[in-house]
Image (cartoon, rainbow, N blue to C red):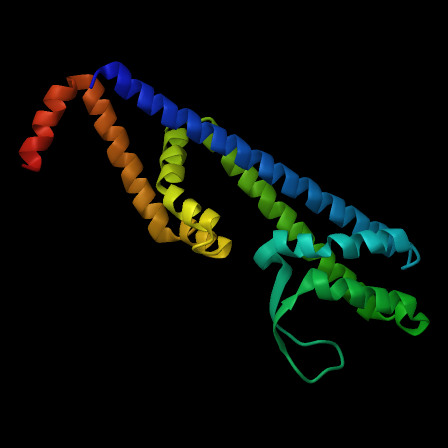
Length: 222
C-alpha cells in the first residue's frame, strides 16, 4: 500500500467528518432559530393577554415539535399542579403549560392571578435554557471545525456507527435505540479508540512505509 493511498484514505475520512460536522452545525442552527421563533411567539401571545388566537394556534401547532426538540430541557420531574393533591412524575412543560396559560388568560378571574405569570415564566425559562444549551453546543462545534484531527475522529465515528444506522434504516431496531447506541459512552470510547489507532497507524505508515509498518505489526501480533 503506497503512502499516497494511505494519505488519500486519511484525507477522505477527514473530509467526510468535516461534512458531517457542517451538517450538524446547520442542524443546530435550525434548532436555535426555531427556539427563538417559538419564544418570540410565546412572548407575543402573552403581551396580547390571550387575545391573539392566530399566535396561539401557531404555538399549539408547533408544540409537539418544540417539546421533542427540547428533550430534557422541556420536562420537569415531580411536578405538583396548582390546587391539586397529586404529583406528575414526568411533566412536559410545552405541551401542558401552553393550554393552561390560555385557560388563565381567558378567565377574567385568573388573568390577574399570579398563576398566569407562573405558567408564562416557566415556559419562558425552559425555552431560554434550551436556546442557551444550543448556543453552547454551537460554540463547541465551531472549535471542532477548526481542528482537522476532530474531522478525522468524527469521520471514524460515523463509519463505526454505520451498522447501527443500517439496522435502524431496515427497521430491525428503532430510531430511539440507534440514538441511544450512538450517544452512549461505550460507543464514544470504542469509536475514539478506533480513531486513535487508525490515525497513529496511518501516520506511521506514511513515515516509515507500509512494508516496515507491517513488519512491526507482525512482530507485535504474530
